[in-house]
Length: 84
Image (cartoon, one colour):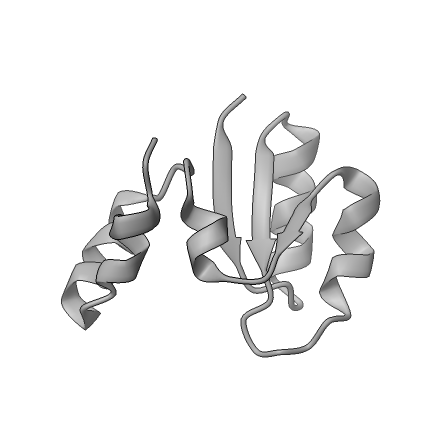
């Protein structure tokens, strides 16, 4: 099963994560802004809630646009921990 890292469990993130889980993906999600209401909405569908970005990206697929953005802002941590 392919793992997808997902950042943010807000108004847009929760329905996207639900759709990914229902499509059969393994989703590792992390709370972006510190609010913990989102996990309650996606845990019943099988999401894994992780505490750090590093945990989310470990062995995960990252969209190319996200990788490009990470390089532009210098988010090298994302790639150091991403080992698909």
